[in-house]
Image (cartoon, rainbow, N blue to C red; front, side, top):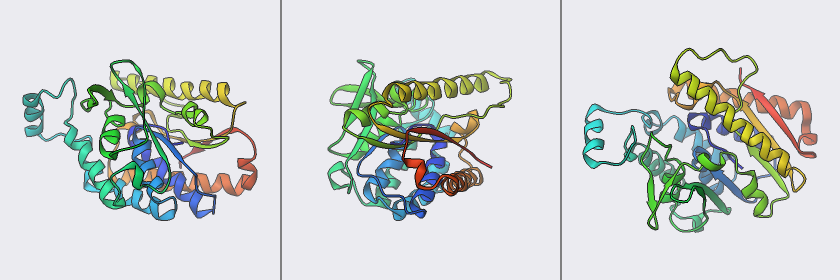
Length: 283
């Protein structure tokens, strides 16, 4: 299960790399939301170290570097097209999705080697929307449509946005699909000594991080009697959601890889025998 978190998604890549390098058994299905769905589509296509290497290439691609960037002409064109209350055009994230699909060579759910469930938000009803079949592109665009950042995506006449709005770590979806052993990578954990926000953006970022992480903790407690759940939480800063510089992303991928390797060296196979939440401090 791969949760959402914007640029924090690079941490999932490092965790996945360490797991595959250690010989941890690959998943039998993938449930994912937001940026986790982008990562999850590659793992569902190639549930191996090869899939992780594709993700590492994707995360340092020009398309990734520019996903939160706006050219001045783009500002004008977005306004002319009236894509809704969004700061950036859909083309930014579409280019990234297109690059991901070109790396895997798969364009539909049915082509994937593993079943994949993508969680988005049906903005009209305010409920979860689950995608399991058909074209990957609209589902990936919908679940990565961060409110106010990218425009919503219309599918079957309904507006869809980032799945993290209603379920940023969809443990419940995995349990409802019958999973008894769940390995999740949740992205919204922060450290115990975060500095006090000094600006509105910092305050909003920290508040969002705390809200989504505690949402996950509540879901874990509610569901832990129904399945064995091991949740790995790379610890990132509140502003990490938007940081897409290559040097930063490479440091996050390598830091999360090393932190996961250290946890595996310490706990070994015992890590997966019982439910638990494990924090991975990035150095």
